[in-house]
Length: 246
Image (spheres, rainbow, N blue to C red):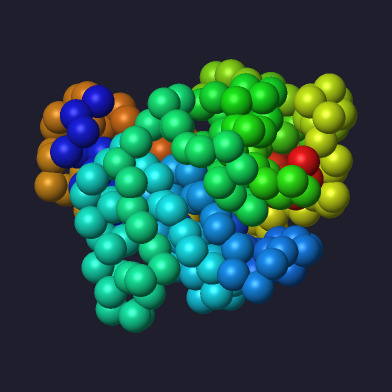
């Protein structure tokens, strides 16, 4: 898919994924941190989470993403809110991260963990954490054993690594971490900050690009996810925050 088209589709969506500022704050309150923690936001996109973390933590944030346009937008937001001195953007892929050992109190990764897998993240990122530091992730989880075919077909096709809470708990234990808590993200929060703005943008781009079959097929995939989430409302699959301590 054309990178420029993808950027145009997602760049003005308040949050590229599940959750909201309210949920970010609720999860952050579960962490026991020093007064000015060092935080790595992996896959930060346009920076809603980075901005919130900077506001509530009084710490320093490294915001990592592979899309320079998104990073530029984050820098503009940080400057407008007088947070530039505490947010540093970094164009880099999560697979090539190379920080000093013990660099961070928190590694925060929302909605991107499917790319590397829970086990891969827990194993690869552990050395970057300080003693008793945290990995905080959100990911799609299968909530029930028996699910409608429509829901299963979509989530397993779109997120091949989707798994169960029990499997994630097992991965956490196998890598010698401690699961502090988990939180199912309300669908209403995701609809407000992601899916409803995305649905509006999908309609706009259909008008702009007309009969472009490649673009319309990708827009169809995005709309399908919105429809699936709206229909099943996190009954069978849902996004869950995991607070994991080293």
